[in-house]
Image 1 (spheres, protein in one colour):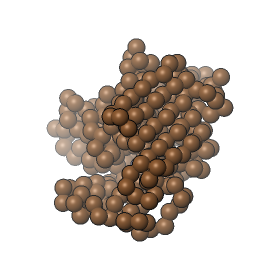
Image 2 (cartoon, protein in one colour; image 1 turned 180 degrees about the vertical axis):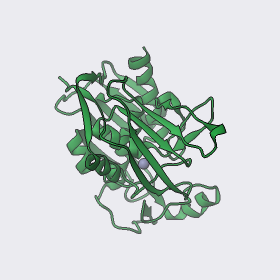
Image 3 (cartoon, protein in one colour; image 1 turned 45 degrees about the vertical axis):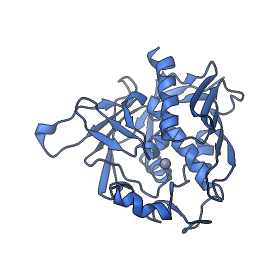
Amino acid sequence: MYKLYPKKTISRQIYIEGIGIHSGEKCTVKLTPRSLLDPAGIYFKKLSFSYLNYYPNKLITPESIYNTDGCITVSDEINRHSIRTIEHLMAALRAHNISNLLIENLTEEIPILDGSAIDYYNVIKETGVIENKIDYIEPIVIKKKEVIIADNNQFIIAAPSSDFNYEMNIVYSVNAAHLLLENKTIEFKYSTETAAAEILPARTFGYLKDIDKLKASNKALGASEKNAVILTDNATLNPLRFPDELVRHKILDFIGDLYTIGRPVIGDFTINSGNHKLHIALAKKLYKDYVIK
Ligand SMILES: [Zn+2]
């Protein structure tokens, strides 16, 4: 059996400041509670100084993710306003099972903070979460095996849960040309408590040798040791929080990407060499099969 998920929001409006890891710009994200009497939904709105560019609230779904290159970007295809790098905030929202919220941003990107999701998680925890004790959101409980393949070695298999003591049973494997990413596999059993302790503090990462190239193409302009694990040829510039922090961060991204569905997903997941594109492909499939139907 799986648990019930009461509709939840935060107890008051909050502002979180920082810089965008890609834009390098100062940015502030505003989180506003939405009524728990309204249907569940996490919405976003790009703020604008100009009244001529008034943007409506837009529901975040896997279909509203239009770019998965390096981070996920949510966009309104009609008004063409977008906010990028929402995945770590989405992972923190999943950990609290926030169902009703408005995310507003003036700039194109939300703050990267320390490169993980733990600060977002803690700020929401300190702010307080309120719930509707008589109205629940229905989780997606995987009923049949789903296979998403990008190419031969990149795939996700989602399957019915083998252990309902946990919401998700995740086996995540990576294999890239770095000591910390070579044939590494983590098995992780998801609950709010295990996620907060073992996954949400894991930071994003990048290669020192790529940074100049990325910056030349207007990416990772804000990246530094303050908000990412920087990989040298055989080690890291800054100390790791976990020996396998990089793979843990892949799981964090997976959790955040999947929460673009707006509902908890219950099942077993085997992921090999995943990335945002693959995670969102699964989210789209589950959204189509279980939400839109
Ligand atoms: Zn990430």
